[in-house]
Length: 116
Length: 110
Image (spheres, each protein chain N blue to C red):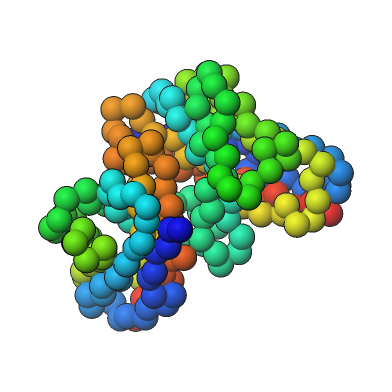
């Protein structure tokens, strides 16, 4: 089956620093990737849609200048949390849609971000 | 606005059958998906319904009624490993975007 990886799996950083999270589709090409945030015991909240070669589309209420998304290739999207604060601590999950399997999304293992 | 409703918790015993319902209100509808997520893990795809009716995949089945904006996930022959959170998710269009429900925590007891 299709595999999506994320790096790092967890990160602890100081308040005010920036953190970059990578999402890779390992064995398929993904023109579209999605970034979600999940707080403990809550649902996945879609943050943005990442399109290869173009600007990301952000959901209402998500600050595009704080959560920078770059989708430079068909297999890599990155999310940078800029000037992170404790309230940004969360589980960040990416997903990718295989061009040949449009009805199924494959999720990465997630990145646990803790901001001190 | 967009909203999905599903029960917050369900408890059942091993070997039993459990049904998790999902009702939705969205500005557009392309299909209903179901995902399973174990604690600390990534969501994994279970099933997808675009048309009315029942889709069966092994022990799991999913049903959709577009006229009622309603679907359900049916889990048969429950096993302890089925204890997890189950999310319904609506595709409001053909972009791949998913809007998730709040999730149902299923606890399977011996």
